Image (cartoon, rainbow, N blue to C red; front, top):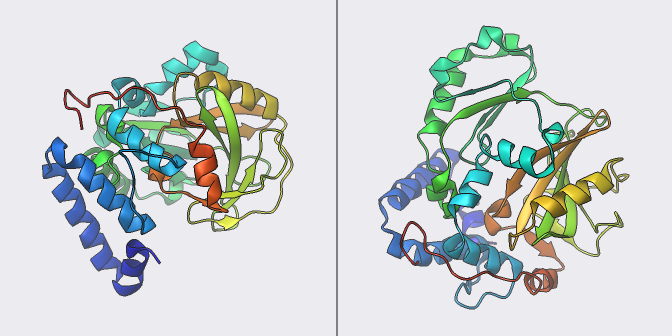
Length: 313
């Protein structure tokens, strides 16, 4: 069991939340010359093994190396859920974009009366800061504004994992339609891409009240490994009708990046871009069998080290 896992067993949720807030405040005060040692401690808390960022070998270690030495303004722009839209439109066409219902700098600017009966609100500068609204009539508007206001004041990079490219994102709110596919929910198709070459695909399905993940090779045969992160193994599912389109788009959008995860949805026969992520699951996902962490690590070609905001970490 990891240190984090033990803490979740020992401490009550309020204590866990207090610890998370304390870590966040500490990280916000930290000078950049301490980021590397803090990142290595973070990895150990989750993995119970050292992170060899000086000589990374596994995929998870290399993702952590990329956090320190390849967190560029370009990655920040593409991790930004609003700014990435223009890049995708220029690269592959705007027909693959989920329609945009609005973008705001402050939750106080949102006119909820003008929004449709169902929609999704997202903070543009982080991960997991989403509010799903299947029925607007049941929405607590004041509480929603408060949650969004809290998120806009947070820094994703300082939550613990030092995903430093998020420091270049602009805190805003976007609104998109509430999408559903044939599963009754919205299945994610996530493509792991190394410099334009799709390595494997995993699906995330939350229609049964918990996350289910299945891992596939690019030809949609079940992979001889699972790539998991706090999710149960899903049964086999048919390939999406738009698989070839997704593969082509993922390859094109992933060119020039040592490691990127590119997400798509398929709704009513149409393929939509979801997001591009450069530090999948904060670099903490697990392979089963574990040897595949090294197999895919060997395929990642790291770029030259780059400074972060003028500092070589």
